[in-house]
Image (tube, rainbow, N blue to C red; front, side):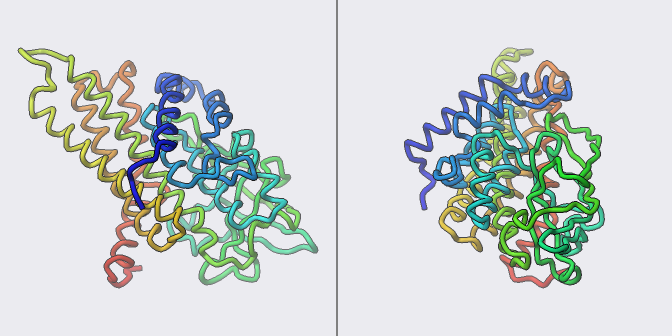
Length: 385
């Protein structure tokens, strides 16, 4: 396992950075404030093979791994274009279908996910469950050869731009006790499926929704994997989610530090640019160190996942997500402080990142739940819940 990137990985990084720079944060924010999606950026990323870089070549993907997909996410975020659906569509859904789907499911969904022509949302969180997935009440029951799906989900990203949703439920026969997830692909035009937008303060072109499943009838082939699946089937997608969340936060931190350093190199109110003053330079240097350390853990998590070490990847992915979220929040805050009043203007594009950076400490898993995981799994401490 080496974190010295190959020539191919370096070229991929450069290519993604160039694409992101051609759009930039101005494009991203303009789309977000207009209530529009970044359709052009998503389409180009798909055509260039960036979205599906981790998916099997036989289904139109790049045949690489989570390391390469996290690299794509990091560079897009560093360029001011942190697309949340990169985390959801290829990392979670693409991975789960590639690992557990039937040949027919793979052929139906993976090529579109890979080239961006299909975007798939992911629905696990519920109003009364939150971080406790074992309390999920969305239920699937059999009706002949069909399945009937009923329940509610909340904070589901990008349903309005998705062609399908991968819904996490439990079967009627296993509706109590520990969750044994049953995963279903639900096309967004399926009768009985509806959603309402959640108004958020985050400036993002990707929206959040509450999802309602009112006796949604699905064919037998909507089920992905086993109806009585081990929790490992679900975490096949959740570990990549944490890695991609870390990648997004690392990229966002890099974006903020770049904005700040560009500004303080030229902003002069005394004899030298303010970047020469240690009160400015030292905090930014510390931010850079913290982001680079978080990036190393993210790379370790991605490398372990690609090697098939699920246990090692889970620990590293959680640590990477925690470290990147904390470092990103501090970097964005310091960037705003470094710019002073200009840090709060639309012109400089940093203030809009303040709320977005907080997301990395909350979702897809909160910092507190990560600390619980590390305390119990890494340190062997007793559970408190």
